[in-house]
Image (cartoon, rainbow, N blue to C red; front, top):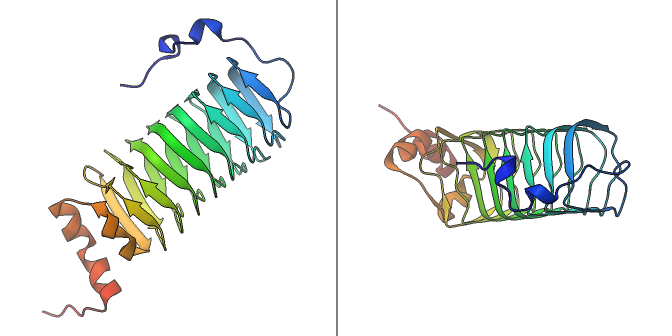
Length: 214
């Protein structure tokens, strides 16, 4: 079960932010609550043991920023640049990303629960020990990405791109839908169940040039 704000070990130390987000800012034990950031410029910022609740980011850039031991609930990102960011020990609950650039990002021990990803760019990203629980990923691009120990329990995957992605111990069992438009050969590093195999069979046949005729 996802944790609540008061469950965080650093909850009693959280304080409100002082001033606006800025490049190379250092934010430790900060609670960003109920705010909107338009065209934010916070590249190379660092967030440690911090929480975000009911916050929206519209466009702008947080490239090269670092998020360590962060907790996010009801956070929306629209058209924001998060390329080359680093995420370690994070929890994202009921969030949404649309048109977000996460290319080259590094995520380790991050849990997404009840989140929606629409046209998110994960190209060349590195995901290790990441879980997508009851999430929706639509038109997301994992081209040339590296996924290790990644799971998708209860999630819906629609029009996923896996071209040249490297999958190691990726578990797709328990997903509601698996729809891959490019990069079916990347599935060699994934585990699926028999039902998913039947669901993917037509696409696999087309990929392998197999003609199906009754």
